[in-house]
Amino acid sequence: MTLPREPRAHGFTLVELLIVLAILALGVGLAMPLLATREPAMALGGATQQVRAARQVIEGLGLEVATPAEARALLQLKGAANVAF
Image (cartoon, rainbow, N blue to C red; front, side, top):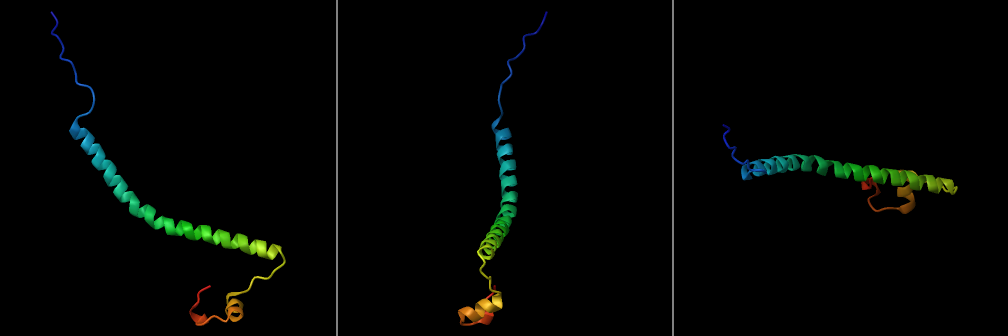
């Protein structure tokens, strides 16, 4: 004689779902500061590439690119020593 089996419940319990959500929130919380510090560096790298491309275009047109000291002298900037090129 066999005993009848009890039907099993399917799905996840509320506790299991809360644990998974807590683990995901912890992972996102740890990843956000790392990604936030990389964004300015990536933007700076993109700007550097754009400046290089612009310089190549200017030089390709046969124009001269001024050095920082020449640019300060040409523009006659007030406080030229404080300007960072």
